[in-house]
Image (cartoon, rainbow over all chains, first blue to last red; front, side, top):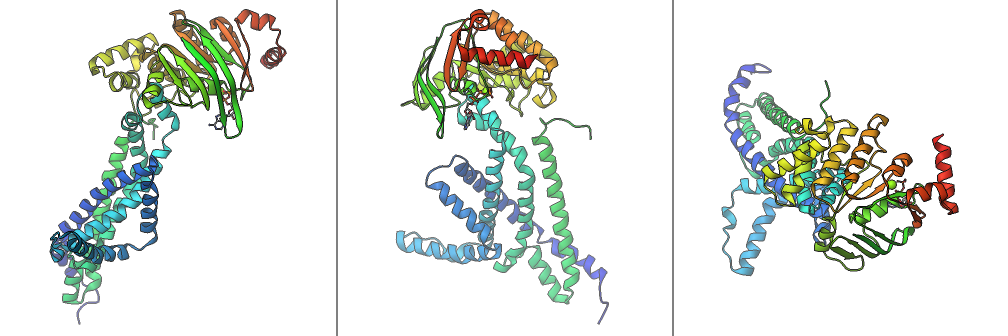
Length: 238
Length: 247
Ligand SMILES: Nc1ncnc2c1ncn2[C@@H]1O[C@H](COP(=O)(O)OP(=O)(O)OP(=O)(O)O)[C@@H](O)[C@H]1O
Ligand SMILES: [Mg+2]
């Protein structure tokens, strides 16, 4: 046997693991965007307390919070094909049950997951805006929709960014679960490289460094966005 | 101009306004005075439909609304007749000074941005804020914020302006200039309903004073009579307590 720890191997395996980075980034980005859309809709349903839909939204959030991410991925992975099959039988449609790429399941599962968490963030951010702001909008005869667009949502965004940023970073890390449905992301790629040489520790260091760098860049970018979104707040000399 | 008929309002089981009937004519400056919890703020907010009465009828200018049955359009028509200056300013925090004033012109009145900005700038010049157009509210003093609040309320060309203790959140150094500004607007003929604890100001600006207690209109009179010859024991007690506190 060679060395206990092989730094050269580690460095050389970087490029190979990195080959799968686009897959990881693609899954994280697309499910993040879809998750934001879901969150926006759900938070609005809850904020406006729309009948029938609001309790459904609550149940959805509670379910997502109360079940492991991995289980959710499995439910989507095995559940959606069954659903398509049932639709085919019932309505005579012809969805190709086996033709759905695994990556679509991963994106759906992660988007549904992140959407639930982010909707709670958005709702509480909307509620955190001073009620006097809405009253002031009404006093100059804006409609509720106009008030939301001009005043309430922009302020809520400033409040929401730090917690949203946390969820988006968790989402990037959760993409490491998708190897379980045979997607080759950086995690799966690391396993492949590691099992070829039995140097798992080295390749896991490689993936952890990659996740760390990606998450740090995203965190930094979002902190910049936050500064922009809150530019109207008092400038302190610090 | 303004007419309230049989207005009732409660929160849960707490009756806050009972059977309020009130008529205000164009150009009047009506001041509401009364002890804390009397219902002054509530009465003012009803006029702007920020609070919904349990029953009764409100008319301002051409708009009428009945609490027992009303539509969204009626609410908007009523609100278009008045505007509110808030105790805590409630400026749009994410909007600059000029946007605070121009937004309603653009969004509600559908004015062109250029015209709206022009009108907003004129109003801000009038209230002495023309040199801060691009500042955000967070970077203004209390007095400056309230000037913007007044300009924003003027921008909608209200038939009546509502002021809820417009100076009570201000440091003493700014109170005088805001009162001066309100007086200037009153002198131009604006109809006003004003809640204030500044009795000297109330005396000098009001054409009419209403004493409110426990949700009822106790006395409705001109300033001189109310302050000097009120025969109502409750008014007397209130004024007596007030002068006692001021000394
Ligand atoms: N949103 C609310 N929910 C429940 N009770 C309320 C609410 N707003 C006001 N009240 C109650 O209604 C009563 C009248 O309040 P209001 O604010 O109109 O008094 P006010 O005359 O303006 O007093 P102040 O001089 O202290 O401002 C008070 O007893 C108050 O506790
Ligand atoms: Mg009050």
